[in-house]
Length: 133
Image 1 (cartoon, rainbow, N blue to C red):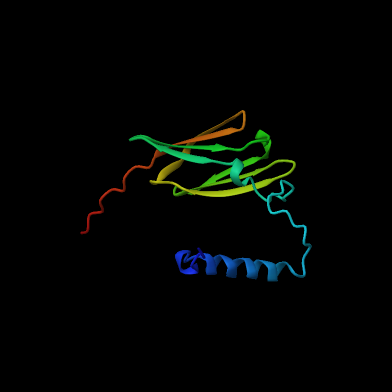
Image 2: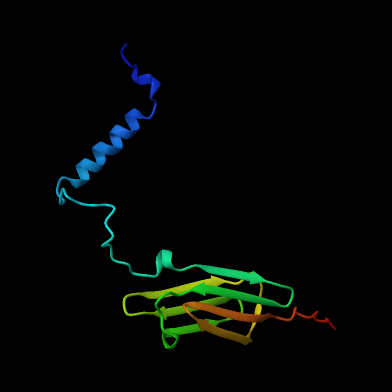
């Protein structure tokens, strides 16, 4: 019994993708290993994870910065966004973290221990009403 190609609706699509990939690789090294672990890492990428925890009184940002020395971390905050810049011997990391609510950046405290950065902010006071006279 012969298989009917109509039973596999994606066969044509897969063949076309394979053809395009082969076409792109014609001028390149045919021994390219897409699963190679020798790729260049321009940032911390998958090694980094940022969590934001929010309570009624504070906002806590926790970031993984593996391999970074404490002296190579810079933090800036404008009340709405926290910018984390870090550098190790092999990597550079710049991340802008949008905070879920406005914070008082002047009350910030930060700790760094075993590759874990933790920054805690007090929530900013709610804006007050302005009376119009």
